Length: 247
Image (cartoon, rainbow, N blue to C red; front, side):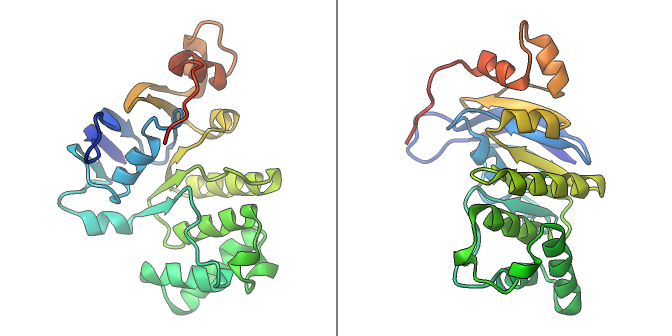
């Protein structure tokens, strides 16, 4: 589904590459976890794959479409859940979702039905006509997710989709993502919740200093790392214990 060849990004004025020479193939209907410390290059890589950021070097294709030749078509088959809430706080949940669905060409009763369907599954029916400004973090995350999947994307990119939410909201989000994946959506997701990633992802890749340093099934990576009992211990072994504060 996704083929990445020597993909790199160096921001203007930066001394180093934020993403450097990434080679990766993500198969159809995988749940691929992109893991790494703060500033490792995860968001930059996802931004390039989402066609939000122009690569400095290299190339990639999604379902046979390339950034250079098929940028608009590519955007139509992907969904993006960013770290920050992509919602208008002064509008209701329904108004936000109707607007986002309209941007993908959905309309009328079809759009209304899709909104109601996802809202019901994620437990937000009674809040459909409430303004987003009054929503909790977990509720905003769920609405954010719905806005990215109304058009039934082939690939869904999620950047920290469960950060800062309560356990119930996290479970609802993960369950809904698993159902989407069963129905054919390929998922690429970043997270600092390594226990979540270990149980959610079919494969993971650990990125650090812009480079992909290892990839594989969580169980394989744990078995390969001497003394590791879980994915978190693999992560520490690969990236070190040094703090990763950055500005």
